Length: 489
Image (cartoon, rainbow, N blue to C red; front, top):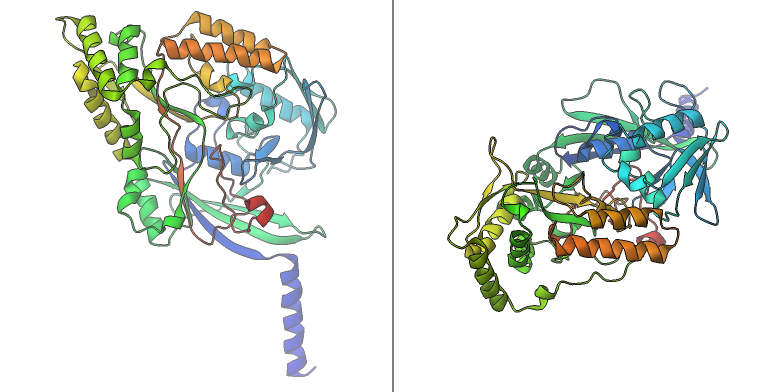
């Protein structure tokens, strides 16, 4: 064979090898916070980086796509009964990293552990309508409900319901066990082509870093995607040289506001809580955060939730600012008389956003004679911040954060409404009960709402598979795969 013939043969071999697998390159992803860990959600609170890792290597029955829509996870397909009380999932043929097949009885056992009474899963209460979970065959699971829950799939897609078996998950990514540079996790997966062969390989280098470091790495083009931003650190981006197109703010629903941290203390008085929530200048506070589209909120519920109309605005919100402040000062004088006004200790995360928040509250509450300070070790905390994204479109999650046994200050009547709503078989009845519970929570000022949560990301132009969604869930799959125009619209 001539030298030219040998060269052509080598070229053909290389081309043939390339047809089986294409390496689409690595994507460097930084999550703000500690290094992600593979944890069991039944063990307690899952940090943002842990949530991203769980979604990547320990999928649930279903998972979110980039748009926040539901796509298959362990289950390749599912059916919902006409009455909405039965969800039947058929598992895809798959294996745990150890090589053991994924079978229905194992999945049921893991899921039951997540929702058991002893579980510390942070959102297990959202699936309280589940009556039974059974393995019908080796590949078929049924979830039976006490009452219809159209948002059940949204809940099952959350990382808190990731299925972890003996410290391992079923994908879609695999975690490399080879040594990596300090703080890095290497994730990889092969994406099958139409003929069953591997058509491309996705690799993600995932790390957890402080906000300032993540922003600097992005501006230095050392990372392609920054996830996990919140109100606390968004101000750090203002002085960085970041293209406007790189900023992405998720249109999330959820709770962002203050809740009493203990039963006793000055906030045991409903009158004081009402004074405080009315005195907050939400317009000024939201404006100081400089977040596009962020709207102030004075109710526990926000617009656009399933089965409810617009939240009923409190009467005081329409009162002119100067008149309201004068009235509140007079009411504070009457409430306290000659007694010393309280200093409230507030538990907040670190970051410039927290300093903005406490400075604004100090300014708004000063006319009432109420002082504020950050929570300190050894001194009782009076208020804590709730900064949480709703896991589904149901209003029930918002309200159940303030049940007796969960919140230090509560209303048993609101609990009765929530219990009745959970068992209500008719959507309109359930909506009416939830609306009444919301009214009771607002009237008692059990929660001092400010706005929706803030969730931001930094996205390089190469990360064409990123999309905004109301759950701020950003899967690591397909990050360099362009979304179709139909999906993008």
